[in-house]
Image (cartoon, rainbow, N blue to C red; front, side, top):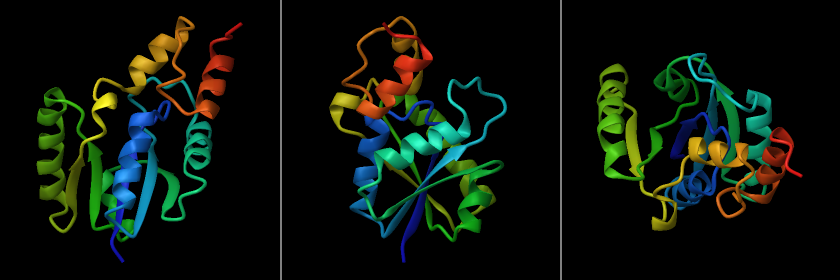
Length: 160
């Protein structure tokens, strides 16, 4: 069975993330969307909240599993017997970072392949930071996140 992981902070999950997962399930038998516990990042939602939002987002996709991890992505991939790591590539600005990470991951775990997937063009400018910043000022983010995520953001930022 071809199993891959899609790691990220997903703070919050966006329609761009969801698009990447839908692309991945067309290619692989199982996609494990995994929330990274990154102590160096300032987050809005707890790990449990992010896992819940992801599970709600993919509740109808039988090939998707959601979990969380702490540590190296390649170690988590190995523990799950994954053959690859999915990463989203939005724009050329993402390429250098993702290329460096892919090379380091190959050095650490040559048996695990990094797979770069591009989202639909309408999501190429979208990321969680932009969504959080818009939500903080009560901007309309309804087209950038699933409805259940929008509701959680409205509560976090006390939308009227």
